[in-house]
Length: 411
Ligand code: SF4
Image (cartoon, rainbow, N blue to C red; front, side, top):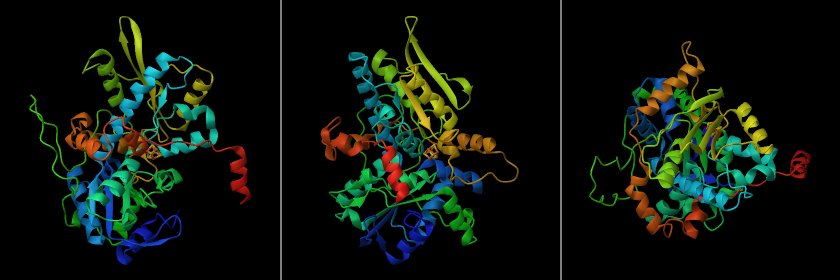
């Protein structure tokens, strides 16, 4: 894994146009695709004192100068992940209402592999039913690139080398999971994960500040978005570009799911969403009350201390939540383990605050108004809620038994 997903491997693929896959097969590369996620891009923006837009175009220029054929933003995958997670939440809510013994709620977010690996190894079969099956944006982007892009370009998916730009090393573990090896296509959805800190090292190895790199625009291989239905009000942005979602830049979607549920359940499009801190700012909750009763309670638990607390509550049957956004890093992905470090006396918390402010300057994404998604559901996934959509956009988890751990150690 270390050599397979390193900057050395990436540079080798750029120059040799070959890679060795997880099964040991050497493959020719026809297309190198790099997908940018917002958090590490903002990390470099803070590091080099550039705006998010400048950083994005400089990154595209830099990656293209190394040999990338296409550099994409991940908004489309994030929007798909949000829509699927919203629908999954409503499905689980109905299931729990129909059968109070069902372990459908609380739904626990799954886009953080640090948390998911911990849950699989430590709490096994008890916790897994609660974890959202919706794939993370990284893995949905992988499916888009290896399925939709490969089909559009009439390429063998295994000839596409897909790199994602991410905020932590745990995303490398996620990308290399067997669950994300596509047997039909004979390849992983994501072949290499590069982090903000690794990209900074690559730039520094060439003594090249990002500001001095030539800019280039993001690519957009998805075709023109379908025409909008006539509707009042400003149209949400379509086309390439990093976007933010409602809520913080943690990488989770609690706010989005909360507001969607309030709208579905009570027809309210602007339900109040106010968090109150519990033990600390990384463990907080928001509630919605109707008719004097609490109807929704959402939590955010970041960092392992708070996660352990949450799991203990669940085990004692004392979790009051319908949904919890669980992220292993305190403050979530903006504070990921492979983001660039604070410089010139700035504290970690100050840097996260600066990243949060950069995140809030991004244009707001509106997943339900992303017109491209309607076409993807129709043309690629056989419609919303179809078997193909569930098979493509959802995954499963596996308890790691004590005997497996022992076996691994023995070997
Ligand atoms: Fe990675 Fe941390 Fe984000 Fe989890 S919270 S996905 S470990 S950066």
